[in-house]
Length: 176
Image (cartoon, rainbow, N blue to C red; front, side):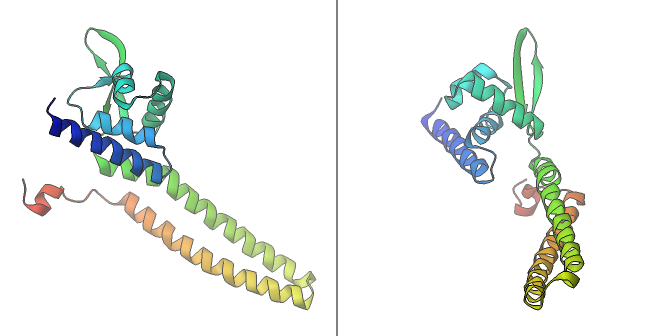
């Protein structure tokens, strides 16, 4: 393979590895996804092990995670009994699924917990001393701010997940 092509592929593997690590998915997951994304053909676990330089156990575990996040899918290759994979290339689908199944659930959980905390504070106030009621009012004020923020985040995420994919970037840049 040409040196420039090798360098570009290596930079994509490194870059996506760092990006996925930043978002809490692990560097190897990003590298595996990048290897598939930059391959014209489906790749086997052996191929992926060779490309990313990780053990077969690590590759296999990370591929299961990529499948769970719907970033890759197993495909059949005629005449070969090994497992092969190809990437989901619709990044909008990936982002939407991840936001819906991970971030949105976390935000909803935060909103629910904050609402429970507000109810607990209200219930406890009658039995508190004056000093404790002042502290409870302070807590309540802060929790309302957090609740408002997470409620807004929930609204944004729900609208994002419900929206359709934006136009193809090629149509926006005129590079069709």
